[in-house]
Image 1 (cartoon, rainbow, N blue to C red):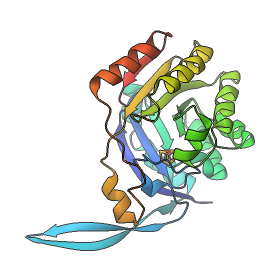
Image 2 (spheres, helix red, strand yellow; image 1 turned 90 degrees about the horizontal axis):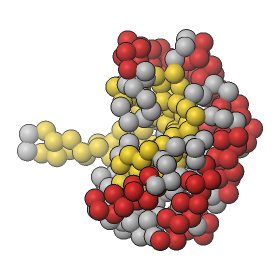
Image 3 (tube, rainbow, N blue to C red; image 1 turned 120 degrees about the vertical axis):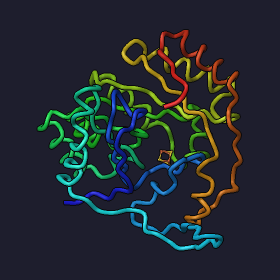
Amino acid sequence: MKGLLFDIRHYAVHDGPGIRTTVFLKGCPLACSWCHNPESQLPATESMIINRRVGEVLHETSETVGYYSTPLEVVHEIEKSRLFFDESGGGGTFSGGEPMMQPEFMDEVLTLCKDRELHTAVDTCGYVSVETLRTIAAHTDLFLFDLKVMDLAKHIEYTGVSNHLILNNLELLVAMKKKIWLRMPVIPGVNDTPEEVAAFTELLSGLYPSVDRLFLLPYHAAAKSKYKRLGLETDKYTFSQPDTESLNTLKNTYGKIGFKVRIGG
Ligand code: SF4
């Protein structure tokens, strides 16, 4: 059995506790308009244009995004940083894309991690079947659970799917007493409006204190060039970067519920 990945990064410090190795799996059931990793969305290998400067001349070539690895190969790669994990309380994080879009691979790789006493975190958009979630949760120490938009119509408009399954799965993980850190991209005009903030406040109040950590991830346009290089549409929406004042306002609002809120990953 092999999984389709597009990257493995060592020494990550924003993907869970301690120093981590983050494995990026390819394929996502959502297509968020602000996605920073558009190369993660397609569940297949694809070509991306690469510009390389040689002297004064810019050369345009293409490279393949995505490669296949066995669970054991991935675990061996994670284990290379075991010394750093032991000292920092880190481990392996699975991100993407949506890792649980490859459930058999994830089940195997997480089982191998737990056999080796490696801490495991799964970064998820929450849009997975209940059956898959239950299977994966059995070997996962921490979920980094993404919340994007509360309004149903807006969620469908900006991500392509309903948020019903996502919110139900979040409730399920809470009921299973899984450890969860919430992550929320901050997209001005989309999920920082008074209506959205009121709806998020109600949701978070219901989750607290079972869940008490929230990371606000400010939108930035750094990935725009990747869309062009993948041949994807870029001009459907234009988002701006949130300013410090509005980020601090959100931090204070959600902090008042009792959440430990951090701006950034
Ligand atoms: S869920 Fe994450 S990886 Fe998937 S499209 Fe949205 S931002 Fe991108």
